[in-house]
Length: 166
Length: 187
Image (tube, rainbow over all chains, first blue to last red; front, side, top):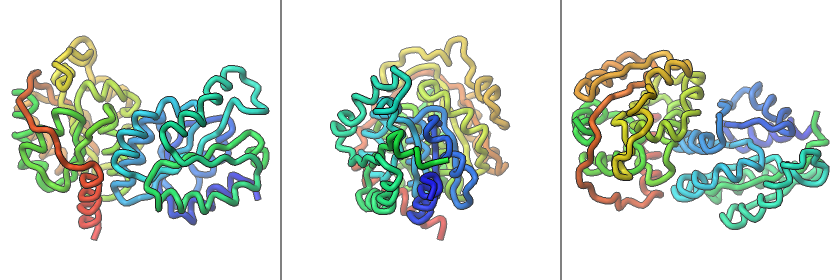
């Protein structure tokens, strides 16, 4: 199965009802599917910390949220993650395209790639890393775990993972 | 009229509604004036009050008032296009515009100088934007609630603060009792 469809089906099974996103080339397919899927409300945001706020509001409303963003955004959202999501004990799956790794063609993307895991580790964010399309099979368990943990959880996704999408 | 007086004047109007309140003195003032489970106090994260309010309004039916400030809206200006393009008719954004960063010592904001948040909100596509004097806020807010239409209110008030207590509530308690209130309204 196409990884984009598999991700959306996993989100449905996890009873996620609200998704916000900032685009990335690698994420284009999954964002398009989320936008078309019934059962989700997809609200694109202008900056990822704004998205963290929207997701906090959704959770307060009793709806399970999810944010889709690029790893460069890890640098953007630190204050919101720490003083809102973590401080108030909100669950938040973060599906993150891991730009700047092997296969990257844009030099500048490497600069945030080298800090991504260190930042997430410093923030004690549980972090999972998908390398191959088959790794999407882990997503059901990770999403369920996120709502048990009531923490932000990062799912980093390599270029090689998205090769299974179309 | 300063912000604390404005908040006091709107208490009878917001008493039955879900309220998301901005970081710092606004939350501390509201907490001091009338604490209740349907108040969500922001203890950190400047700028995200309107985003939390919109996310809340889009995902359930009860009315939501986000009490924000001019400085915080300037911090997260991207929120206004998102609000304009994702209409929630149960959502009211009340921007208490005193032209200053009250919680940090009343330093001037650009909203107190050349920038009009009313015009910014309109340019972003928000349909019902009302600018009013602080003294008119309660009435404007009451009418906005009755209209059942998403409304952005820019209430122009004087800069100034009153002594307030620190909010002693644990953040998890604030969130938990607020979610219970939302669930109770859904039932």
